[in-house]
Image (cartoon, rainbow over all chains, first blue to last red; front, top):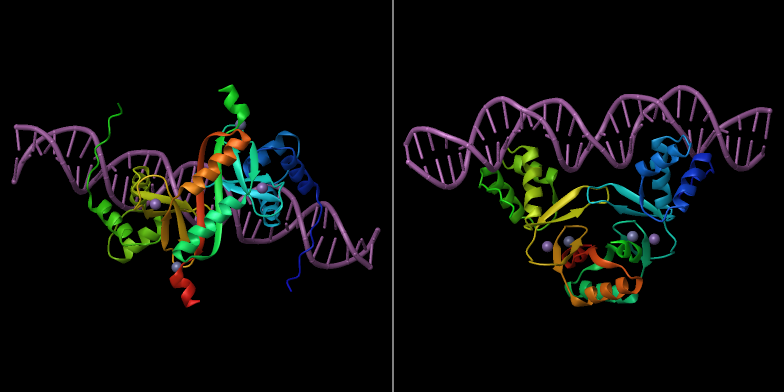
Length: 134
Length: 134
DNA sequence: GGTTGACCTGAGAATGGTTGTCAATTCAGC
DNA sequence: GCTGAATTGACAACCATTCTCAGGTCAACC
Ligand SMILES: [Mn+2]
Ligand SMILES: [Mn+2]
Ligand SMILES: [Zn+2]
Ligand SMILES: [Zn+2]
């Protein structure tokens, strides 16, 4: 029985959640902090990091990692297990799931005797809009 | 026609390659440097980073990222496109590929009009040996 | 086996994202 | 309103990784 710590609704958290709500793409903590500063919100960088981390833990956000290790966050619209297909140009993201992938996983893991399987799938491509502009 | 820079065989690179050769698991640059120091090899940390990076670029190594962004390297036994199933306990890794996954990718990306698709799949589980010990 | 020069090394400084510190502030229940 | 735990933010600390550059080393060619 872990005592769940009380969660407060602060001006900062609302501002961060709003910003995430209106973004279709994945954003870094630094990105978000810069955007908030630009729009007049004066929020500490540490608070942004803390809030993003907490929201991710609560499943409200998806996390992704840049090739050089930077963490990117985006609101998660889908409940339950799923994956993402991200546009490498504009960041537009589609949430994806499907039994075919899971079947393949079960088959492959079974073949080698691996159990208690976890997996992450990252798909990157160019979205229709960006492809049209090219 | 980019002039390929000459590659030299130095004591340091041999030591690093050897260490990688005898490891079944993914290792970080720091891990590797520590292991080399322990076995008497006195190699600069910067050299380890440079060498791993170069080998990865040449396709001799696979790279993986920890959840907190640390880069892990392992010798790659397979030529061409493939994925990995890693034991979360001992690091033992199986190289995996298959048309079923690629078919699924083609179908999904096509459905949303995404083109020029790239993807990474990370599978984590418990290998038969480690499962037996549990 | 000696010369030569591009390549390579390593100690230390610098970088940059992220987390820790802690006094001051702010929610939220009473 | 009062009160205390939760939260904030300026700043320091962390830590993996990269940069710098003076000195060392490989390999080709005599
Ligand atoms: Mn999602
Ligand atoms: Mn491989
Ligand atoms: Zn796009
Ligand atoms: Zn194992």
